[in-house]
Image (cartoon, rainbow, N blue to C red; front, side, top):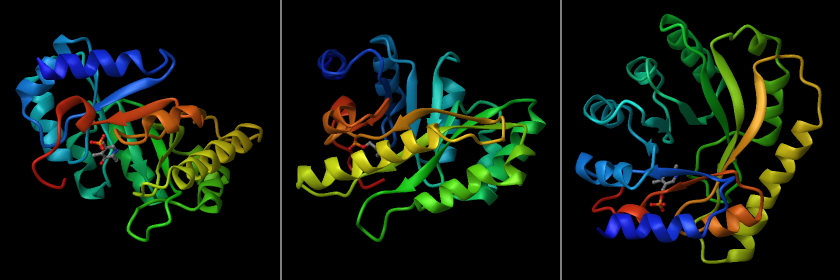
Length: 225
Ligand SMILES: *Cc1c(COP(=O)(O)O)cnc(C)c1O
């Protein structure tokens, strides 16, 4: 019941143009089914094996998003069903996703993860590295992936102006990229994935089109995932 209430109040506070990814990592299948019954269809997981296990037992019209850091050798396990991969932070990983997608005659959408936080621990590409990927000749050859936009995680801080500044910088960067003419035709910069339970309102105010919300839907996680 609490999950249903959480979803209702969350949906009231976000514009319909923003995609809600319900982050169900560490949560049982029964919780996901409750959220599904409340109308949600997009779920995010950060471990490939966990996502595969859940995919196998849950309704097949769920769109599964991989939001965690990717281990290249595990991409093959989700290539037949994953809908969007948020955390791509190297060209090598793009190549592996392309290779695995090809085996299933699919085109897998990917977001490039930008490093916007100040902390050292966060994964992600610099803005320059992202531009280099988008401009590279090699990208054009990857027919089984599509670059669908960017993803970022703000610093873990209570300083809202810092968080807002980081979101703004990524939004501004995406807009600059949109105004450029890249030759690869597998680039469609439509999505800006930023914002979690603690900062999604700030993210939306600063240009987010896709938020990844876990604990505000499912409650606190029991362990760090
Ligand atoms: C866990 C996680 C989230 C959701 O975090 P909450 O604070 O529970 O909303 C969002 N994005 C990524 C990449 C995550 O790993």
